[in-house]
Amino acid sequence: MDKREKEFVEDMGDLADERKLIPMGDMGAEDPEPEEDLNPDHVLVLRRPIKIGGEEVRRLEFDFDELTAKDLHKASKYLKNLGIPVSVPALDFEYQLVLFTYAVKACMDNVEMADLMRLSAADASKATGLARDFLLDKDPGLKDLGSEE
Image (cartoon, rainbow, N blue to C red; front, side, top):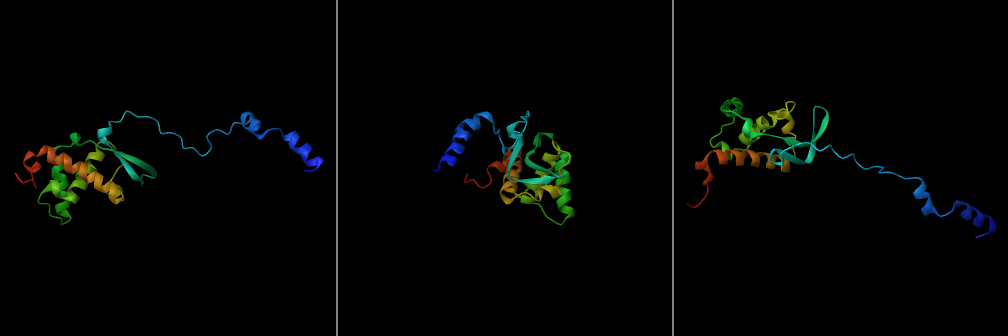
């Protein structure tokens, strides 16, 4: 290193000192989502977010306890009008997905069936599993379905 380069390096000082003078902050870090009072038993965290109403949604709030007999009837009627027969609701994927949609709409007004049809297969499987669990808990006769007893 010649004399000129040496003076330049000395004038710069220690680069480690520069970091102390100019804090970089959290560049590129995502802003944490505000903590909400959500019941984790009523939230489906999506593996793959979907857009609903132009906004990216990473979790769906749902509440099966808000559903009424009319909602169960509407789910059956909706599928019947589409020509989809439902013999055992607790085992029917389409019925479970429609029922999950109603449970989501109880908490999130802007969600439509078309939105949930864009769920990834893994997220849809979780959603229908939640509906199936709800239906099996409410119908004890179906709980033993498939058991050897």
